[in-house]
Image 1 (tube, rainbow, N blue to C red):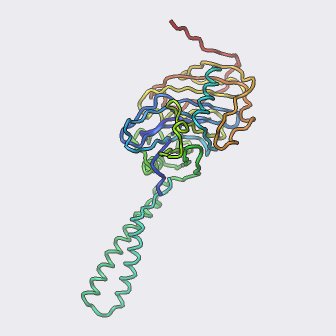
Image 2 (tube, rainbow, N blue to C red):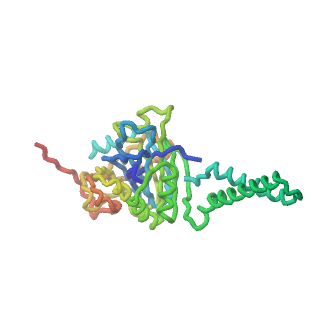
Length: 353
């Protein structure tokens, strides 16, 4: 899966036939690219997490018609939403100031039909008494079609015989994204499904998936293809793609990092965590701000669906800002957050010359 990030993950080829998460951002061309910056907002009310993920991406100057894509691991099947990048920019500015389906190949179906017809012709020729050259030829052709049909049947149904399958739990369009939520009990099946839908993977990606599969997580796969009816500002703003928003029940807020680690690059991560009280993270993330939200979180504008956020979702009393540039080694495990022992405010102090 060498084409995505963690505030997530976003776009593939056409479907054939990034509080808990982060992901991997992909470009389905041969040369991978580095996502140098990702940011997110986690809203945690004690029972569920809402994660807003956004990534800055760099694509090849001549992408040869490819599309972007990202994959985000989440602990349970989420509710999905998005917003335009301009609204996300204003939201982050506010906080900154304050601190696959199974693919059936048509060719195989035709071979299967040919095999059935061959069987019918073969049976009919058995009742022909004459052993004329024409009858023998027809019978031989029928046998060939029967063999081809048998091979087609094996190709069509072999994936269901002892081979792990990927379940597409849900699919919908939110904002500029077509999204699928998938899961499987085998990481290789996940990788194969994603490869069949335009991604490229390595062994490192399979290992990263394995740790999520082992804990029963599912994966949000979002795509964005060229769209004539979308203006550029609806897709990106200052190099940041329109955010993907996911909400799911959880006891502990978490920000998945393992897929980002497989890029082999350092990644700058900025996270805002809003909760009923101050939260803490491990030493990988520096706490830069902690303070009360006297009026609650600002209501995001231009979300899809429009009623995704309610006043109750945003009635959180404390906001914390964490930031760090993480190495691949530091991203081997996810970021988890816990309530801090105190609610003391904090503001990072910087000395500039």
